[in-house]
Amino acid sequence: MRTEVISDLAQQKSVPWSLANFAAKKLNISRRQVYTLINGYRQDEGLVTEMLVKKSHGGKGKSLLPEAIDQIIQDVLKSHYLNKQKYSDTVVWNEIDQRCLKQNLTVG
Image (cartoon, rainbow, N blue to C red; front, side, top):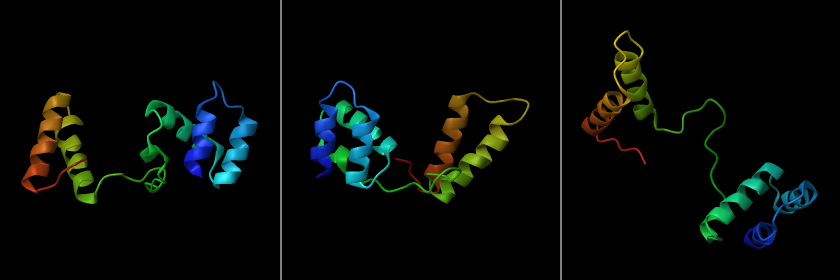
């Protein structure tokens, strides 16, 4: 049902908020989510995977990364970036990457 509703709306040049509201109620999601799905559908040219229900990442202020990786990033930023020397982005990234590799952690 989600794919049918969103694909129909995605075919239109513009989607008025009244139609988006109707779709939101029908799909039990917010109007903003309807527009997000429409944009994703248009960009991915109708891929069914775009219509999958995606798990929430916990909300505002919560990290999307595992705690161990988040801690490494915070430590490296404090030691390599938030100081007088301010290493380059590349140096900071390489240090984060090396520390993650040492602990067998991967991102992405």
